[in-house]
Amino acid sequence: MDVLKYFYEEPASLDVLSDDLDPDARRQAGPALPLEALFEGPRYYRGYLAGTDLATGRIGLTALAHPASFAAPLLDVLEPVWRRVPDAGTAGAVDPAEARAVLQDPRGTALLASGGGVAAGALVAAAGPDRRRALPALRSLLDGGAVVLLPEPAHDGFDWSLFAARPLRAVLVDAFRRHPAEGVRRFVIPYRRARGEHRFYFEQWQLDAPLPAYIEEV
Image: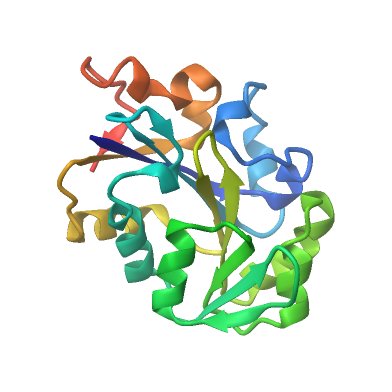
């Protein structure tokens, strides 16, 4: 069985996040940031898609045996205008079929973006390895209407970070429901409630026990 997890933070201040370069909830063990900090400046929204193939023990969204369980909902809710930035090179357009392939296997990809009127230079700048320096370009992409996806190395394969200037949780939950996947359990979790490895990997030890109220199964 596959377990797909969507962690969300709505809203999320990118200024606050500039001191926290790693969006992977597994490695976040520090105290929560003050609530007032989240409401300074423009509103942004972020999500993190992760997964575990319990049958094989492989950990990583792209290691799931049923990749359509996350690719189909993402393609459903995001605009069918895609751009990709490779690890080395310039940004280029990809069609929805190519975007699906990248979502399922992002090797060689630094950034994937959906929608928005964006310049190639901003895409390349936002894909830079130093996320603090990439923040101005990332903001410009989000303010232009793009949803930006960044691949995140996992134990086996990759997870995906998502950034947007609009809430994504509700539309993704609806898309999960429109695309049922046999052999997959999907969960939606507030990012701040999953800080720390023990909570991030709850499926390893708690899946057959009563789950905390903050974990929503879709």
